[in-house]
Length: 250
Image (cartoon, rainbow, N blue to C red; front, side):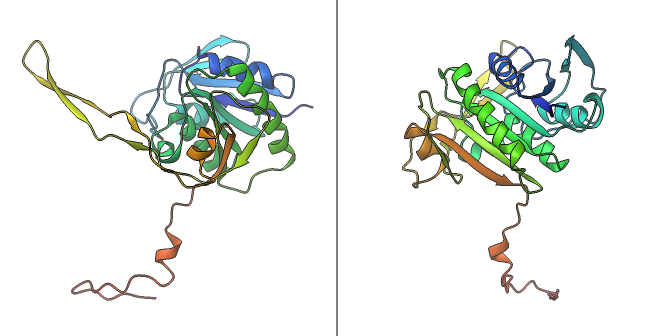
């Protein structure tokens, strides 16, 4: 039997990147698609706890959920999919998720939710204006490799496509993604203050073999991510800080 793949995204159930991904993966596996009913970009790993999540069957195997990307994978893995997926694939996002973007991205969070459930996962994002079908061809080849060589537990792959690329990729580390700090204050017609946050990205000199530098070079970037955020270097040895009135234990 073909493996079962769960697909999701943060651009919503009608996003062209999701359709292109499904078209490319359909010959390889049985697909179940659970995606937000509307765009939920930059919601990070938010989950919905205080209101019901309502699924809408769009067509056979496709479900729109009234929740976040992480909600979609949570419900998809634990309830909607007929069996435990062999792999979760999130994307293809319209816009790269590089460097610190991984902390904000709903695309990456969907894959991270799968990793939390001990399901291998891949997040896919492409530069604006890139060809979704072209990116999806690479995604299909990567999925075949990932099914043959399962990831370690609690790990995922964050893949970024440049606008134009040939048949070359690089394994990378996270780089820097810098945005101009910006909070724009405005006033509505009733005289009440409101804000728009988030400025444009700023070009920075990135280290070699980082995701950003690799995409700028015109190569596909594959960055392995681990859910363990512990700063292990600060524990060996741990800080010898005096904290008045308290004593440290080994």
